Length: 295
Length: 251
Image: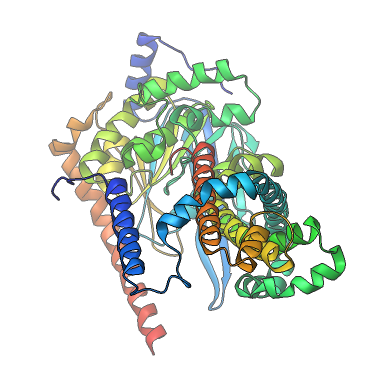
């Protein structure tokens, strides 16, 4: 667990925020992805899902990967989380090469992943429970994070009694409770409606700024990517490569209000410009595939 | 929807009472044959006699003990075999169709075989109940484990859980609702077969009593005992439902 957050140090945080605004921060690098490729063997032959992807994430930075369906962004997520093997290239966290799930990487999944048989607090405390942390201690830590995601008072509820957005916040709290160096999120808000998504994005932003949590968000939602990120990596349709990196120089600390601003609109338009081409390619290929299957 | 005028249980009880009253009436005017169907009043009246003269409670304990033994065997072996089949793909693929067929087969017809092996004893009855209830539990256990959401397993893997932790903390609790469907189904089969075999081999508790009373042509007694068995089943299955809710509070 990393204990290096300058906790509760307003000045330090403000200074960092400014530093990050300047974009070329000299902060420590947390995550290095070097020339990562991944190929799958299918009946139609070998498919290159990810092709020579390289990027770095600095400590405390919020980076989004955006791309059309089928650009291999979920594959990148699974590689970084250590859930798939057999890729080329290297992934290093704080200088250490990873091979398999790593304690310094926390994952929030796209699909429903809160355990329906556990209460909110037992869901959030789960990672501590399996590491053998005593009940009182793990509940105390869990409460802190439940509070942080705004679910105080819901500790004893079951996921079935919560809304989709609340359940996803439980999942985020469960991941944060382990205090991972890097937070990986794979389209965590994909199943939610737009309003909930923006409000939840706000929440994530606040938490991220509070913890100075290094975060990588996988998404196909441009608004979300611009709202939350310091940098947005645009990926190409298959094979997935990094097409372009867009620095989002919107002031921090940010809130959901930024969504309405002119600068915000310009970033969205800029990213959409790049993305449109890839998305149309993806769509055309999907249609071809459907036609071939029909023939 | 409008508000219900009477609570459903009261409405149900009223319907039953009305039906019994009708039967009573039809029997008394001779439209129904009272040598085939006993008077409902006589059936109700024979309950005390069953408790007094036929040791209904003692027989309930006998059948209950057999049912409990068979159920425990069904759950232990059913879930155990189900887990084994889930873990060993070749075993599962090879045996699953057979188990599914066994679940639908009238296994009770195999009772002479069990009589030869275990003799005319409680062992035969328990064994028959066990065999009859096993298949659905195995099938539903396999289904439960196969159906655990991939995202749950990924959460487990992302925390580097040991195989044991993955099993007890994620796979097993995630499968419980499906396993319980199997257990409920299996125990129904077990109970039916248990009492059926008691009846067939004229040995043991409630099944034997039904057989005895039938041979004595005590129709009210037969009907009363059957009603008693039904009531006991209702109690057992509502208890089982509670147990399930206790294990998995909200689904």
